[in-house]
Length: 232
Image: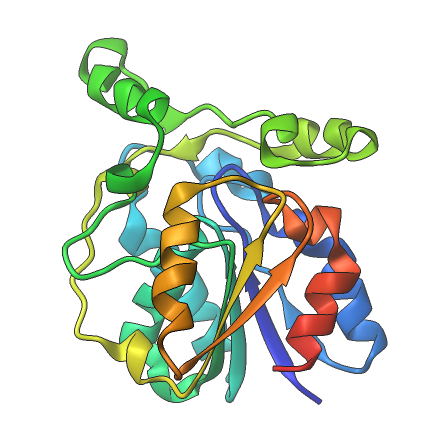
């Protein structure tokens, strides 16, 4: 039996992993898909102080309080920052890291560095607008198939803005974990993820995988995601 902790990206919640979770559980594995503070069913906790450290603590505390060991820790998109931060605190509990079309932060970096101009403009205007959260991207822009768009659009919620401006302080704990996988969703054009793929392909400590679907791979191709996770 393997233990998976699945971490969602911006605007989403633990709900987005339902299809993948069901497939893993059917195979006899344990799955935890926590929703980060201020999102999904925890959207009532949204506030200006919710930042990157809050979200890292959300996942670290699941691992600690559930007494999890040898965790296969999976993160989608924004959650690449969360996985990296969690590794800094509980690397001894992590058996493998899986980045699913995810950002790969370095020491001193922040989400705002690699995000779209529209998001940067919204953050810059926040002192005047009073906004504390970023509006969700439409599901169509994330490569979600038309039949699933009402589900995804209906459950995505504004994302705490502070998480995009908080900068990471890293010691390289992520890179010292032996098993590391990067999954690229090839149906989603993104220069940042392509650059990460090119860099990691030359690093023998990383295993590279690809899926022919949009960015929300856990929605678009749950069987493909589950297949890769079971092979980790």
